[in-house]
Amino acid sequence: MAIRAPYTITECWRFFEEPATPRQRQYEALRAFFVEEMTSAEAAQRFGYSPGAFRVLCHAFRRGQLPEFFATARTGPREQPKKSRAREQIVALRKRNYSIYEISQALKEQGTPLGATAVREVLAQEGFAPLPRRRDEERPIGVRPNAEAVANVHDFALAPREFTTRVGGLFLFVHDLVRLGGDDALALGAKLPGSGMIPAGHALRAALALKLWSIERKSHVMALVADEGLALFCGLNAMPKKSFLSEYSSRITPQKVSHLLACGTVS
Image 1 (cartoon, rainbow, N blue to C red):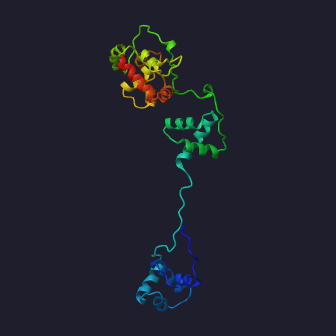
Image 2: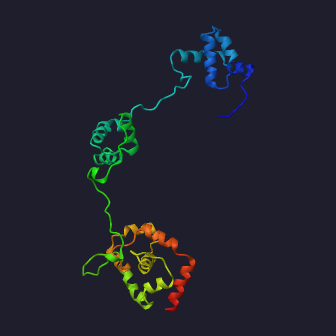
Image 3: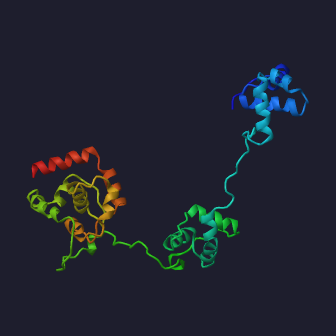
């Protein structure tokens, strides 16, 4: 809001005596004629109307043919139909220990979708307190994410089996890895990091698999963590998750990359 000096007494007088807009001029002229009992000719002359035009104005005003002089504030709807329709169902589900997000999902499945924010507002209006944090076994039965195996070289087995993989093309590079002397020797020669569960050579092979398969971001590997072919290429029971790969990538310094390239050239 702009800050300005208050109106002077003269400016206030002119606001009423010298209307700036046609609607205000009509109002002041009609008020002078009907309230202040000014004659039709005097009111017309004072506010710049011809006698005939002012008579037409008075005729229209007396028959309610003029638009409203003052704007009326219009309030929005006080009721929200979607909330009102789902209110009873929301209360019933909360009494069955459903969380806000579970209620929202249940309403969506019933064909009356309502967002979590709207569900929270309804529950607050009905006087429900937030649910305490629950264990998994206390939650309603539903679809939940599967817990994939943890990458551990000690759980790796070459037992005969059949599986489907999306990364079969990676095995075309096995011959090149053997020709270079094996990635274990390369990783040890370059002093690359590793762990007891994921040795340096296996970690190098996992990082190499991402590059060969054009996986730019570590988070994108989560779509392939259950792929047995990718785990077999790495020599592990399961593909390392994004947390390990991100940490591993941050520990590979430019000096270690140079040592790795040098070891590969010598081999």
